[in-house]
Amino acid sequence: MAEKRKFQAIKGTRDLLPPDTELWNRVEATAREVFGTFGFGEIRPPIFEPTELFARSIGADTDVVSKEMYSFPDHGLWSLEGVRTDILLRSPDWSDPYSVKIFTRIIDSFIDRTSAAMLQGEMPKTTDNERAIEQLRAASVRVSTAMVPQTAGLSEAALSLCLEHIHNAAALLKFGDLVTLRPEATASVCRAYIEHGMHAWPQPVKLYYMGPMFRRERPQKGRYRQFYQIGAEVLETVQPGQGGAKDIPKDAAVDAEVIEMVMTFFARLGLEGAQLEINSIGHAAENCRRGYVQKLKAALEQVKDRLGPDSQRRIETNPLRVLDSKVESEQAIIAGLPKIADHLCDDCAKQYAEVKRQLDLRGVNYAENWRLVRGLDYYMRTTFEITAKGLGSQNAVCGGGRYDGLVELLGGLPTKGIGFAIGEDRLILSLQEAGKGEAAAGRDVFVAWMGEKAQATAIGAAQRLRAAGYRVELPPAEQKFGKALGQADKLGARYAVILGEDEVATGQWTVKTLADGSQQKMSEAEFLERLKREVKES
Ligand code: HAM
Image 1: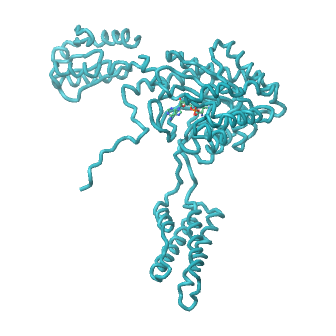
Image 2 (image 1 turned 135 degrees about the horizontal axis):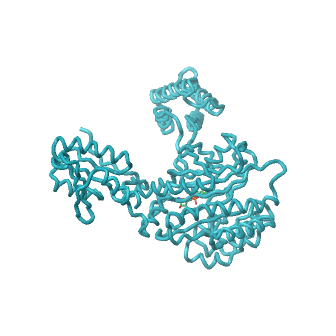
């Protein structure tokens, strides 16, 4: 008998259940509503994309790409993958012809199967794959020939070299392309923008998305491996003769409107204590961010001994990220480092000033935070983050910024971009902590019935009430009224309609209000009127 196994959701993932999902749906419906009023349309990109798309957009040295992505080769050749692993682990005993023969047989069959898979299009027919198969074939022939007594003559060292060639060639074979469960969606939106020729759509193109993202982070409160984002992006291809300094006021207004939209959404949800922080990280040029990073690096080298291992490592890989450090002992040191605002080029400084003016025009409150650099490589100029209450250390509920150039980096036309993503799990948590996550009553009406005739009336009543949009529970089997009322109470129903012989005969239903236990007789039409007044309006 198969061993009984208790399955559980994988670490860092979870089930979202009712009644919580009601709040999730409310949040998502509000996002659609608010974003719609700003002229955004929904995009639903795939959950997985080529690994290269994220590596190129987000940056190979970022935490997300270097350690947090769920990536896997996309193919169905798992038994061949098993043979490959077997070959990689094997090292035949050269003094034992039988052991060598088995080894070469495994390789020859592997070569036949991979060649057939390539012919049938199950495996990419690339020059690298063809070369790897040729190398395997050549090495296998050399080994087989060396084993025939008449032609034997390869030294053990030469045979070991053959084995190395075999291992290298087997390791090089690619059964399928590497794909990744999306860790974020900005890269996907840019990919879609290029793929669907959106540069030819009316500009700018405003898109929003919502759905699961995947990052292999250490799970804790507000941090999951499968988490949900609600995000939006504004993309605009630079037309010939446009761009440059004269676009600064327009770009700044777009940045401010995007930020205004998130803040409007949060306000509509009743999220309290949302704090917006903004910064500008300039653009990648010697007279702007690149020059600043050099100065920052030099300053960091001076204080290196007083920094922890993570920051020390980042001096080499990504000095800007040192500014993100939350390590207590580093805070005073970081406060004394050069500030990017003092090293922005003229255009970036103007754009930053204009973003602040545009936020003021819109009545959006913000605080400046010169240490806000964000963890993804594609940003330039405006960056922002919003924190919310009740979240502990993972209190960033939204992050975003401008990413002019990303579409071009991915093979598209020169295009500007700005957007954000809200951590929906954190948003929900913050709303719940503040008591804003109250789920509505479980049912509007519980229809209790006794007797065959009453069941027919109850079915008809349930159908009409549901058609009018009310949430109705109709028990599948007859219940004593006392028990039925107990169940109605447990389900959080507002009203119980009691249908017995009398009610069916007179057409006067007994309606019980569960909150106060009061009971009244009324016709179906009167009950519908009451529901309309009391349920629809609440
Ligand atoms: P991000 O800062 O990496 O930006 O993520 C945005 C938000 O997603 C975070 O502020 C946080 O609320 C939430 N989040 C991130 N990781 C987790 C996690 N492991 N568990 C729970 N929530 C998480 C981006 O993803 C960019 N694509 C945002 C953007 C759009 N920038 C421009 N356009």
